[in-house]
Length: 418
Image 1: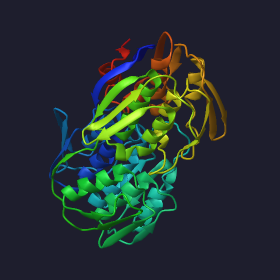
Image 2 (image 1 turned 90 degrees about the vertical axis):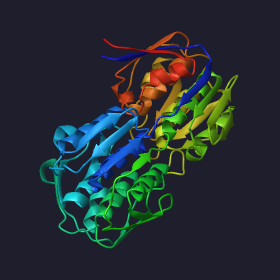
Image 3 (image 1 turned 60 degrees about the vertical axis):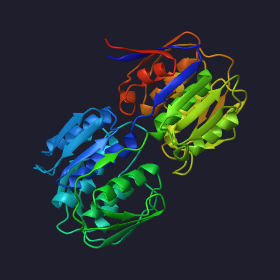
Image 4 (image 1 turned 180 degrees about the vertical axis):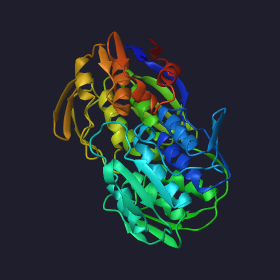
């Protein structure tokens, strides 16, 4: 079993290149099914969730291979339209393959997806939107049996700006007849990245980044070479690591416009942050200050994925900070592990109050989910002594090599294999 050994007490100094975005590359990998030509995805991160997507593509008859940091996908040999229960359970984002398979094959068979246990994350919006486009979906026995002899474009209004539903409908609409308009669409940068990829393949898609996305379906798509955007949550993680440990770091390729709500909070806490086209520089010295209430919300609000790492950064701040989690109801599972290290956190429903302490102490802790695991690493950097983090497979779902990256920033972190 792999584990991370984190020795705290030192400041961070150094530079790291931010990896390609996990939440961009997963829908892009599903989108490769819309063209029979080869697609080259550059800056593709080597993650557990990417490996799961590759296994899904190969199970469908596609050819996938690595060339350096590029992933080459050829779907010309597509021979199936079903995904096994075992593959679907590996990650929540596996649901994104539904829209693409329907657009390509006219039918699909797959079970409900898995992923981190962050509370109910139903795909009802995905299914109702696909039904609006003409898909017939039967979910008897926990398996989705989908048919769509002819998808037809129309206006689809989402009751919530769901990222996954927006992406699924964008992919399905590429194979529909006529024009599809997605109203109340998610506005995340990753939606814009998916649109840019589809446009590079010849699709007529516009509006991503706003609340209305328009897709003109029925346009034949071709292969392309596309570079994935940098991962804004990885960048937020390393900014919070610098805030927790102190020091000066530079995050190459990070884009502040994608995480301005995070940098605004860190500036309020006492960090100095400067950004340009090359990346983001962050300097933190002395005690951090508590900040105004942090409330997670759909983009452009504060990202739920950055809640845990920011909480870890503020464990030794002066004063108390209130967190309000409005996206996932089980997003405080990391709190019990942080309290093992001496953190003072009180949780009531969707609210957590973090009161800064003078010191944290290293401990044996267990990763509960992807971002909660990263938060434990950050807390370990700020703690006295040694922290041992177990069940780090969660972290591997979204970080190429968190130990390598933190070492590049001067941290004493090693990965141990048993």
